[in-house]
Image 1: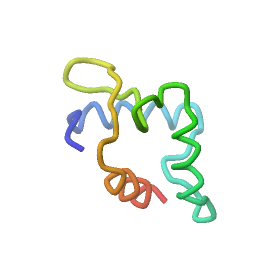
Image 2 (image 1 turned 180 degrees about the horizontal axis):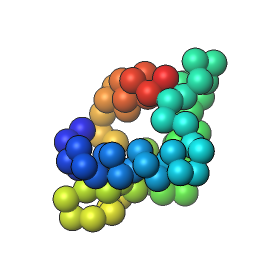
Image 3 (image 1 turned 90 degrees about the vertical axis):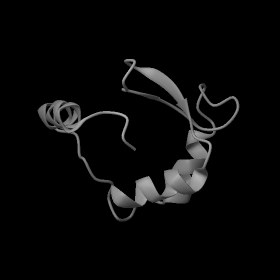
Image 4 (image 1 turned 30 degrees about the horizontal axis):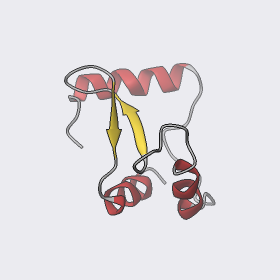
Length: 77
């Protein structure tokens, strides 16, 4: 996505590892179901919204192209 540099990505990976959280989704996870749950999130008013780290710090990011989201989820599965 290009929102943060490699060093910042590594920092996020270290935090996840510290808390024993997986970097990958299990193959059995239904990606369509996850996407539908994202739409039920309280931040989801005009579509799926994530709060992501970026150049300007942490900020809400609206997903304009659901195909990109689906491809990103496939990468981590």
